[in-house]
Length: 145
Image (cartoon, rainbow, N blue to C red; front, side):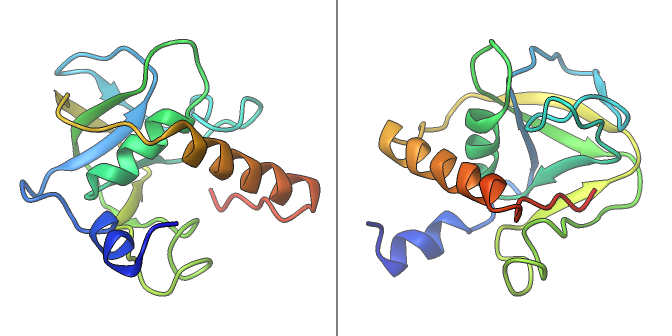
């Protein structure tokens, strides 16, 4: 199990200050991500927002958890509209916004791809998926979108 230092480091914003978006979609610089498409995580949900983070590890996890056949990918993005805290991981579940996770109802432009990242161990991803599946079974998997 990770110690408190590892956990705190996991939530540090990337030194570049960049916004990241994790997915399995193959995108290129200049592509726009817009709301109104299938969620990366719930196949039957059309998302009202585009989600992003300042924390590389959070974007990596998002990419690894995303549905799809492509490899996990982390894009550097730039929101083109107003940005707000992501209520799915902020005050609803974690005090404040320690994951530096945000969302926008506007478009987000892909400006590049971050390729310098480490994947999570398979055991970590299995444990994370098991926790999400338990929330679903218990009826506690609420998406604030």
